[in-house]
Length: 181
Image (cartoon, rainbow, N blue to C red; front, side):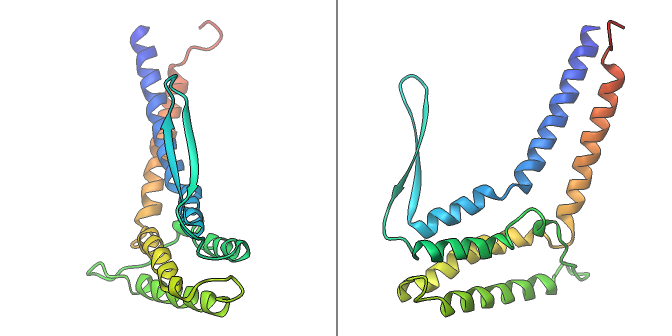
């Protein structure tokens, strides 16, 4: 009986770990927060007090790259791409593993971002010297983020994770004694 309980707990823990991993892969809030801090010229400092309490402080390290309206508009625009739904897409690959769709997407994204920022440069109070740096910073995020779509590997890995969670959950139900059985 103790071995069954140990096995059940191990299976539940494995399923929870798989679920947490899936949640981390789909949750884009941390990525968006990093971009927000980049645009606001902020960093987060984490410290621990003597009694073990964790403190998180956001401090300014310079001048924001745009005004509040600009930062919010850039973040809203970026959220249309950096979200759990977008990362579940698929850029097909040829027999060599090259994805023309991905390459075209990245090129189009950079052009659209550049245009959006240029058209609003003065409305958003973006210093002309910061223009390229903002684009480069965003592209440093988008290129690896969107590469997850190449060859449909992202969604295939979700399928394997879901299968693991489901099979662990189903086998656990058979092992857990109900109502004193």
